[in-house]
Image (cartoon, rainbow, N blue to C red; front, side):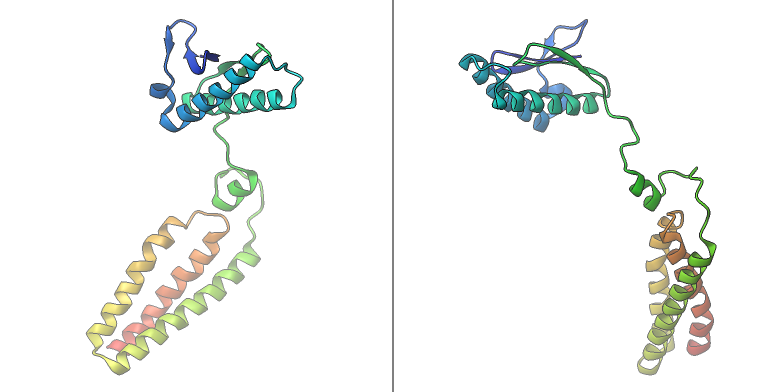
Length: 200
């Protein structure tokens, strides 16, 4: 795929295909950015500005950025023809692992990480969260039991448990959050002993 400026328009041309308008290939937003850049590049070309001009360098840099976006959208390399210098540059698509190392560590994108499991810290956090959740659940149930019927109290406890369950299930494999999930799940499970004792 080749990206170049023709007149005041951007043209995406396949090596074996005819020229095509980029809107169908890359979407309206990127097409608008490409066409705006093409108008600016055409103005620099008409003005006879050389590649050594600082503004021309900005136009070239913007073209390379847009070529990278096109390559990412299409998932294939793009041959970028610089309208200022008339040079060609092959812009590869970005790799699929675009998330940062920090995001992979926090959100579990790299399950093969060789880091040891922090059992001591993790279990301490889980115990603390478990106690907080259990106390909160029992406080809710005992307050409701004193003011309302047992069935309403039981229904509230079921709703709290059902409300927490999807979030806990989704976060169960995230490296840092899993300790909080473990504590919250244990706290809810242990609190149900107290819930049943209070309600029944």
